[in-house]
Image (cartoon, rainbow, N blue to C red; front, side):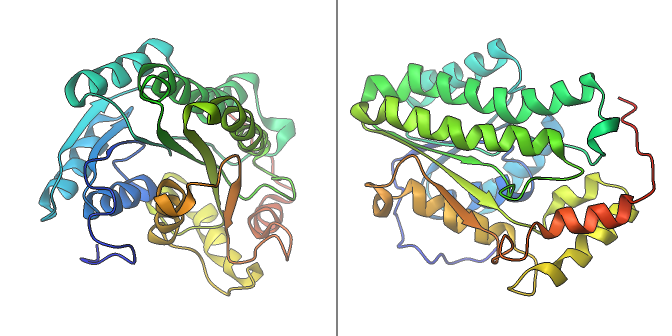
Length: 282
């Protein structure tokens, strides 16, 4: 955690930010940057252990602003509504929303069972919709202001071995455009950030063999390296900031030029799984 930001001090002073998946990885990096710039930060996640660890990191920062957390399953409508309702009741509203919560697993499309497909679609697509709708209806539309940024993925050349998340993230890009159009008259901006291959704590959820393949993907990225959570956070904060007041309905790619070579992650996974059967046993 660096103690300085590329953005001006106090940029988000008085702003109330909700970050899903904010206890770890990219979500925590975004929450740290928001807190560093004066925002009140409310993190939400399905796993309380991650939230408690993330909150401890945020509270250890010598920065102004409040910190809170709440367990929330973004796939569950009642859980989402309760989370947003609690934040509105405690802090009076929501000014900034980052839809970072998500998840997936590698598998050839032919081996993905419906249960696994549904889980990934519901987490990445339905969860983003439910959270955006709840924040908009309970806070941003009534107050006629707000900014939403959803984290998707580099899926412009398809997403072999990740068909479920590729489909979900592409849908979120389209959803971003629709919500931006519908909510613009109320002063609410909606955008997305599409990270390329990023070295974050999320890689720990995969098997060691897949992790090695992941690290090797930097050879197919024009920038010659993997991205960092802080670089994704910087892009998110730009879209949340006043500098992007005339930007809505767009997706900002932060990928080191990866699409210029094709999907490096897909190339590496295809090589890794060639000739292997990897059924989803969930």
